[in-house]
Length: 311
Image (cartoon, rainbow, N blue to C red; front, side, top):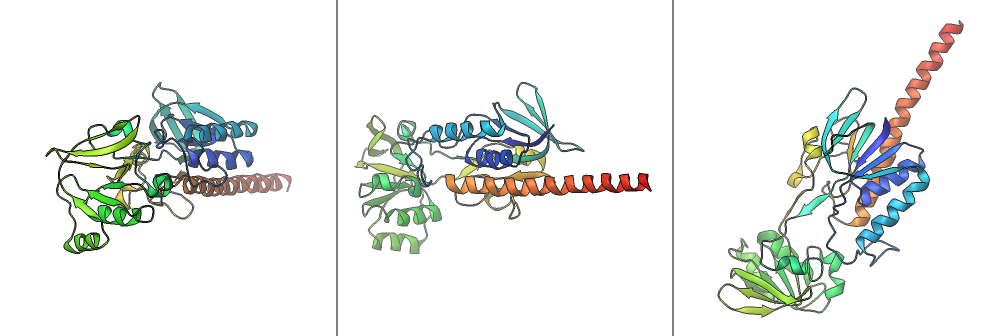
């Protein structure tokens, strides 16, 4: 029986494991080995680790856990059951693991637009987050791929990094008349033609080709096509969904299921690595305090029982 099982070995899960290991908790981290930023060349916005390769960052984190006797296993979890004493976790091989508390840090997946050729450029010159990758393409020719409010917001945001921004909606834009007017005033041209493919060399985007045969040269593309949960485990457990299908937690990352917590990209906060790690730390402290309270009650019960026996 583990004190805590953490499902997900990304920044949130690893940082939670670090704190819990330092609290002398028996911790098991179960990770599928499929992080959200697998395709990204470099991770940004994390103090002292800016520009590091994502997998290198995770490997450093996993290595640091060893001195605290935290166990980490690469495996796919396919079932979680609530028990009287905590949780029963089952992996794809049928192995079962048991814990008093549970932290789900499985993250999200970005919906990648269905455009021919996009896989070649994703993580190299096609991105979803300007805060993460905008600096690397500053002052270059940029394209936004999105619709509606997301298209408007992302287009305006990218003016922070370049004055040369266009919007491709790949069909109906879903923009309001006011949004169209403001984009025009800001110098952002809207292309509503359907896109046939992206073209470029060695991961570097060079042009966007439309189905009508026209094309436009671009150095990078940022898209906003929504996100989805990486794993259905928390939902299967009965954790409550809220805004845009993100899990509802209190300020301590605790869900409506007693003893179950979520952290990282499973919540509705901004999707930065450093924020995910912070949520993992916050969840770890809350979990440790909950365990401390339960252990205190057991110690008090035992002490009072001993006094009664002596009297």
